[in-house]
Image (tube, rainbow, N blue to C red):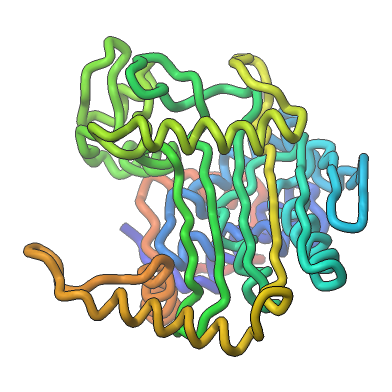
Length: 350
């Protein structure tokens, strides 16, 4: 399993997209988001997707340089059509709009439809946190291909339907809840398959509805389960509501269209902390709360309690120092693209 400096991975990612006709600005944005996912330990949302995104560009499912259209707008809201642009680019721009609206009006809510995959959700609420605001984002694939069976079912009816909330604090890392409402993100099943690893039996059922540890069963007609194991009705309920915010409120709809292109519909909300309490006071108390939670004596099998987002912060410090691990299968696919575009001289060897 090769190990690469994150700067090298950014250079590789950027130049592959440039070779595919993506503008300098958009290639920089996409590369930054993908490598950040690897840095924080979410390899399922990182450079593993480069071959997939390139294929989507070729099929017209990602449109570099797509128009950005504000369909409807008020002082505190907006509905945006991404026209199948890179989800990273569109969602980053919409989050900036939401932050500016909340700076003036204290709250903002936005929806996005017709854009490609937005990657790791954590990047977007973090933008609000850096401006002293609470940020929330949910995502769903509308009527696109599904991955998750509802609680009690054995066929796919839902997306992995993630939700992310970022909160300002004086902790070292960002206090950040970033989770799929399914037992696992689909990318983590793909990662296990590429690494030829077994998966926990609580992640996936096979086509007959039986628990399985083989990630290939998912791709052979199986489904991912809702988060919660035997209490999966709770994860299912969250997923249902995420689909409402990101699929129905956005206008994407619901259902299954096997021929639909991937579409990350998003709901974004931003709250200016100063509208409720002095920011410094809030950040201090949030830090105290996190430390109060961390002071909990660890249960058997654990060494400490972590606040939401702490493990990602630690991963990023370690990987910036020691490099990022990329599985052989993924690197082989990426190397094929480098070879195809004759980029080795431009990129250089790691």
